[in-house]
Image (cartoon, rainbow, N blue to C red; front, side, top):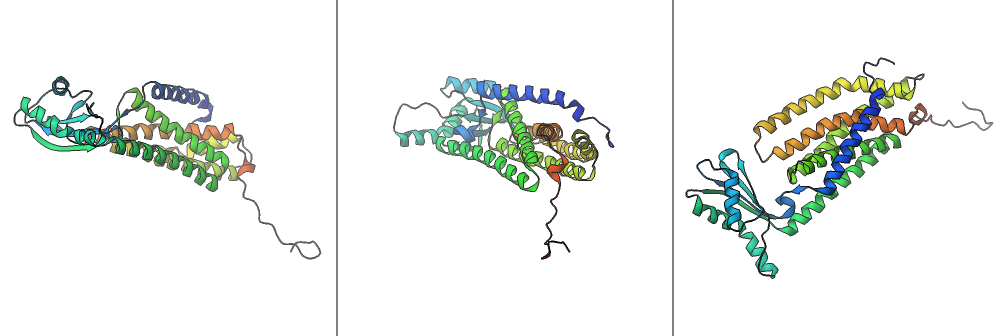
Length: 318
């Protein structure tokens, strides 16, 4: 093969099987377990408190459950003496919407007062409330943002390259997003607005890799005249491999620092982006390029049409 070092396309069958398994597991988990939506989408209260001493989060959660605050999550935040409490909307005895909204808005203060009786000296750092209507709107807007991004990408690649590249790019991006969502569903990590932002970043990052590879593939199809499509694609992948790996590794080093030292608030963002970078790097090599071969791309598809010359009156050309 022309200048090839690694036979990427020779292993595309194995890569397709691995991608297929990951997609099946991801879609299955999303269908069965769904996403563990954060308060940004479900509504509820978020309370951050300082205790001044170390207390087990599970002990606090059980105490709140015993006091009637059900289905909440409690975790350390920043240090072992700081706790972050997420509490979904609680059942109400009234049917009046105004009274329900007022009751839910006071939920954070009620939680703090209840815990203060058990843990004297507790300090309230912050208390935020998100209404269910706002949560539903954020969920709808987030889904629309992802869909819009994929559609815009498809049309951009279609104008910039050809339909084969457009389909390959969209399939690769959808592949990356579904697997990241599948990981969050499988491990029931909290899915909030920061994770949604990470998904949009994954789309941008993966698209950048795909465009670089696609541009080299198009260039080589026009330069190399006597080689099979699979060989030209393999050569192109080898030529862009160094750039792809360097970009991915430097990004992962930063994300690793965020995971280790960024704290709980940014953990979901860093986790989603880390998974997306790894999967996106693989998809730009195997998924997008594999789609090109499946759609039988050839040199003729990428030739630049020659401009037509105006003929003279006698039919001859100047």
